[in-house]
Length: 307
Image: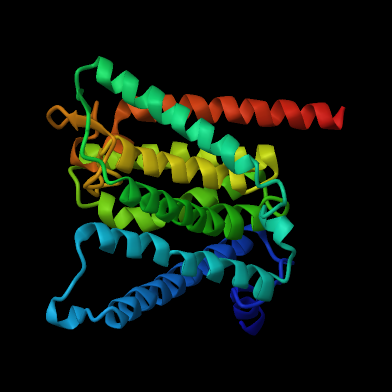
């Protein structure tokens, strides 16, 4: 029993155990790291509010936009916490986590994310489920740029947890499909509490969307041997969806200041209802196609290297 507990404990870097136990160990580490980081991040946000003279215990809050900024920038604590866990518990190099010097891959991922979102929105627009009403003129450029910085941190924090702590720690120890599946479960975990509040059809399509986009993040990480491309794709997808198009992001309303005036027409599986296009069956198909393409590129590249 002591050996079992010692093996399963996420506070050591032992890997000499059955694959199922190793996956459970890494998932337990993810959960602990996620909640510890979240609590620390919320503490930092509360501390910032008190420092600025806001007592949230008495209902004193900043505007919704500022609170969003605090939430996203506060996730730098989660990002840092995941790095500390990797260094202090895993005792491995950051390059093994995908944190390489090839940070230019971030921009490759950002380009892919913007293109993927454009295809999804264009396809849904053709069905009449999304309407384009022109451009906004009264833009708050400062807020938009601040939100971009927030989403850069938010996307990186989630990728360091899911692709870093889970995928990169498992990919050489268990079958690759198991490692990708574990990182996908980790990715679904923080989104589930919001998604489950919606109607069953949106829960199903939303879960499918989380699975296929997580596969995209995993495959691009494997292909580039770097976590930066997944960070760029994740951040720019979220930023463009929320702050450029103003559409709902994972069940949350789009930003108050956006560049383009786009609105959903009705609520259906074509546009994802109030959850947003991440629960759109059309987006699921487009992203699934991207995942298959990235997987084929990865396999082709791996085969050529082994030849």
